[in-house]
View 1 (cartoon, rainbow, N blue to C red):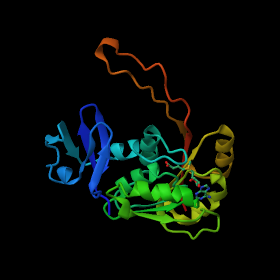
View 2: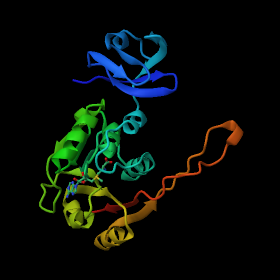
View 3: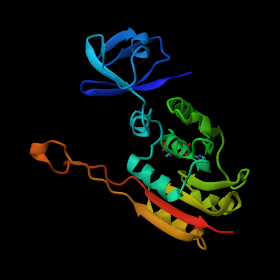
Length: 246
Ligand SMILES: C[S@@+](CC[C@H](N)C(=O)[O-])C[C@H]1O[C@@H](n2cnc3c(N)ncnc32)[C@H](O)[C@@H]1O
């Protein structure tokens, strides 16, 4: 069992697992977790000489602190994917290529309290990272990890949405028509235009097709030098979405 909280100290915010007996934290040092368990959520307390606060972690905190394995989807793209999937509490969504679980955590956050995220991830090394990241989420119980590849022969499971972060999603389009409810959405995340073209060719006949690339430019926050940051994260991936009606 894990029990994750967000610890805020001067100049630093970090996730801590209260289930550990002892903490050894950068900027704070080594101390018994009981000090944290005794703290009231949100109220300032003294942590071995440092003013501190404990908070419930948000999805933003969980994803920012994710253990990284394969390339995780960035928050700017997570937000659009969840939006365009049209997910609602109680929905079932199938995810192909769970990887580190950045998207998995976002999907689980939306389908609570009784929806389901069925996440396929064939690689053991990626699944180990995924399982550790899932332990941080209060919504992990909504996620079923399937330790297999999603293939055209996978068992269809009736779902409202399907999201594919796999190299060849076009191979799964025909299978998607057997598993998506009428009007359900498919979203794929692809890094190159060649892949996008292959997918669009397979999506002929689907409705509401869109291809989106999100660009985000962060700004410095110093009031004396309020301006865009000199460096920005450029291309991440194209988000392709479409709807299928039976
Ligand atoms: C880029 S990563 C996914 C990252 C993830 N979306 C995230 O936000 O953390 C792609 C993952 O797809 C997995 N994969 C590749 N082919 C697959 C398939 N056919 N079915 C399911 N997973 C697959 C890989 O093992 C890899 O972990």
